[in-house]
View: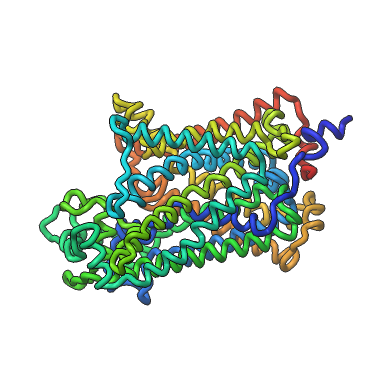
Length: 585
């Protein structure tokens, strides 16, 4: 009877149904989403380095994807060794709680769960946001707008909720149905990616000029002239002066690069449902990571060079072309497309591909770009449901959360209660991305700053990517501790992969841990990061508002620790016994 009380039950009730291909797709779909489609242009606009200053001709964003990819690979290798040693649902939660300690495992998983579940709602809204206002704008003859009389933020909020409900119901039916849906949602945009690359290779002075005149009624010269116009206040030159050269632009881009890589270890959360996980996880994680890095590096390079040199001008010693000009007007923030009287279509990979397609008489096929863009956003959602629900399941199975969250449906082998909670928390993301609680929004007409700071589009929710990096910092730290802690000798001895033995694992752990510490720094300190502590005036009268994201994080972390200890005292469970063992399968 004592053994029965150790965990919620003797077996998880989950079934190992995920094959190697699906494990790879879970990682790729969870990682490749919205931002990568605009990242090279977004950060070229935020850090508009003159194009003649590119090191070896490599755009700073491309270099950031390369360096960020190396950091990700180091983390992946460390995570893969640990996940193979403890292939259980919950992934990093199980590893951290068994090696570093239960309270650290709970705190890291608490923040990671919030990050993923919140992102579920954000992406649900972003699917329609992209369809209506970004990927399928009037530029492609797809003039989608909300129904008459419904404010944009209210419309996005409602359709976001609709998608959350639909995908949550699908998630209730288990890994088999979710996996089939994910396969369909992955392969469609994956195949279309080759079509997009093909269109980008056709971009040149002739095709882009023709495409812009066909769909926008302007020329590349209009953008370059507007961006470099010296009479505009706070113009391009003032922003260039504050970059700090190639190194400054590169470090700024690193923030965007890592954000695009978030999700690189998604399959570890469902390790308890992967066939032969101790063998499959390291291989599938490595394959998925290499494919993602290759895609990001190549799309940023090809996308940038599709516009680089078009309409080129020289201002002083600096050279600019359509690449920098349109990126700056789209994302620089100081001078906007609307303020200079240009079409308000922002620069995305799909935008460039669409213009090139129009320039070579393939404009009628641009609807494929809408499918491409929307599906790459929407296929994030099934992995979000799987990963977030398995975190809740694992914590409940350990009895650090209420036991009902570990209930598994006998027919669908799905933790239904955990899935439903994920859907409920996802509604917070619908509030955030729809901007319905922003100052002046439909649900915040009084412009309440406190509400906007927590649930608005520019509030504390933006720092959930730091929650992810914190989680993986502790995950990789576990590999540093594992070979050194005698009490964890059994885990070390039974690990199927021990690259280089004790010292090899230690070095690999230190490399992954160091990479994640660097990522933490990028999210916390530099200008443009989530916390941007380097820009905080600690003597300012608006200090509390300036560090609202930090305060929000501290409150959420304290709340998690309180939940942990209250539940522990209420149940009177001997956690030292539970966390001395790996959960059963």
